[in-house]
Image (tube, rainbow, N blue to C red):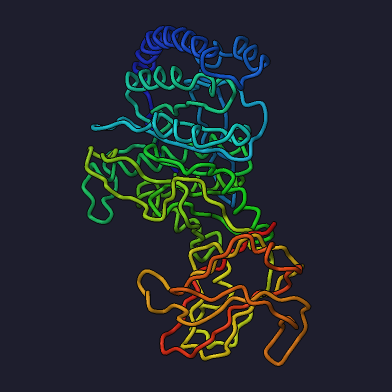
Amino acid sequence: MFKFHQMKPIFEILDKMRCLRKRSAVSFLGVLVIFLLFMNLYIEDTYVLEGDKQLLRETSIHQLNSERYVHTFKDLSNFSGAINVTYRYLAATPLQRKRYLTIGLSSVKRKKGNYLLETIKSIFEQSSYEELKEISVVVHLADFNSSWREVMVQDITQKFAHHIIAGRLMVIHAPEEYYPILDGLKRNYNDPEDRVKFRSKQNVDYAFLLNFCANTSDYYVMLEDDVRCSKNFLTAIKKVITSLEGTYWVTLEFSKLGYIGKLYHSHDLPRLAHFLLMFYQEMPCDWLLTHFRGLLAQKNVIRFKPSLFQHMGYYSSYKGTENKLKDDDFEEESFDIPDNPPASLYTNMNVFENYEASKAYSSVDEYFWGKPPSSGDVFVIVFESPIIISKVKVATGTDDRQNDILHHGALDVGEKVMPSKKGIQCVTYLRLGEFKNGNFEMSEVNQKVPFDIHCMRIYVTKTQKEWLIIRSISIWTS
């Protein structure tokens, strides 16, 4: 599938001489790395157990100075041709157990700026101690410049030694000899040759990273190396995954930018890695992701708001050009994702196309859209089991359709479900309050309602000429 350089005998001899010099340099670096690790151990880390420290003493010299065979690409989905990659461990201790989430980053030397250390810092600082137990971070230093890699390894081990020792952070490198030829590639989309080379190599960088991470956790999220994280992002991700239990998905998106915040099942990583390698020169990685998702039968984007990750870099890794892209849905402070317990949704409003009622109850970036409602129209949520509500929030309209709000309406909760001519509803209702400027929000609902809630309904109190968008219905349970 790929054409790799074939070394002639004379070059093999020269290469062995080069490796001897490289190994002596790496040996010095290894000693320096270990020294830095222990300098930081007792100063910074209050979480590492004695067993972790002993493990480092026994294994770090071998891990930091050797090239080890780690994973190979397997034949999956009728793909043929295994690709063996011998990764270099630049800073790592053996992973003792499978984690819940692996966070992958690939980084190369930039002509301007360097955001990698800030990105790693944000991952750890925005996670609680309990969350740290469930994550692992893998950084692929993918630049072929060994001097830059050595400097970065020194900086990373100096600042994050306790995370390396605790098995939360690994720094790896896939050697250049495993890469396909990156010159003379197809110039799709009329991209200049250097741009094609950059994005093609980036696809291979990501493929090798994905391949390495395939067995380290249950789930995997890809970040870029210039990202800021939302506080307690792991807890938010876990809540979303739990809410989708029993449904099929390939990719969940927690940012709308680039290759940031894209989450996968770890069992899909080998296929995705193989896919990126097969089409590495065809198009940028974020475009390939769209095709991968579609080929695995996830038709629509499943993106969550607010975003959990924000692009913070100012200078791009491509030529140091300016990149001011920001995700305007990002919220840095901790936010509470609603529980939205299982329910059925009904409405007697005239639904427009496929903007059905259920879309208002999803945390995905979708909404209900109906033609102008009349007085007495209802939008009903019937819960599978009676619930106690602590907080409720309903938002109507969108930024680009700010007049498609509920101009006159109220929110009711009810008990005792029974069928009626208008569909399944509750026998009795209690009014919580009126909508204001198209929105409704109330906390401490459980203190105002004397019964377990079977139903909730949006009640139109006055006919309006405008269409109605119900953007989101959010419910938090006690």
